[in-house]
Image 1 (cartoon, chains in turn yellow, brown):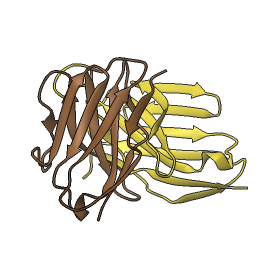
Image 2 (image 1 turned 180 degrees about the horizontal axis):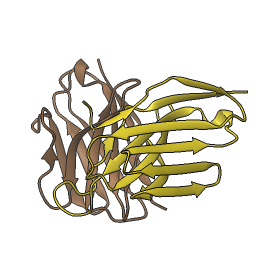
Image 3 (image 1 turned 90 degrees about the vertical axis):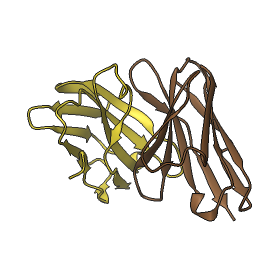
Image 4 (image 1 turned 120 degrees about the vertical axis):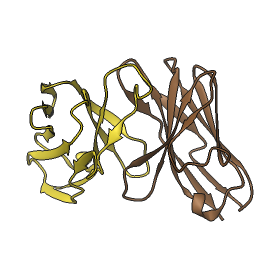
Length: 115
Length: 113
């Protein structure tokens, strides 16, 4: 079993739809949770960063973390064609130690928003 | 803020040559940088952790003599692919550890003929 599981998709939605992306994980020691967006042939771009359980909203993006279920989500409202990209969830342990800052990634979900 | 650059963005080389890729944090200092490799439609695979002023820590299965990493300053880490072969062709991405998480460079596409 992989430490972080993410449905690779591909996911295709019409413009304006609400998109839900999800990851599950097995290691309860993860404390920091991130979502990255990666356009083709580009490096990942940090979208959302959350610590522990709860919700965080930034414009059209909402990140949710449920540590009790070991489940994180990213919601995109009013999706646009420019949101078409690969979305990677990532998580890390508490600060300090030899694992400090190391990220464990999901497989990435390919999203296409068509006009 | 939190901008990371990579150079070159693309390189084509002959088999047997060495290629150096630079990773720079432009507006912050990074004690720790990471090097990843990514295959088409796959997630990022961590190759090594680069710490300023000390030897890099390589992930299991990554040849340290093949992928030389130098982190000579708080804003620069380099990855040298030595005696490159076609199977080394890939997308190489670096990241720099900021105050809260990693910030990624734009990647370097390496093609070995």
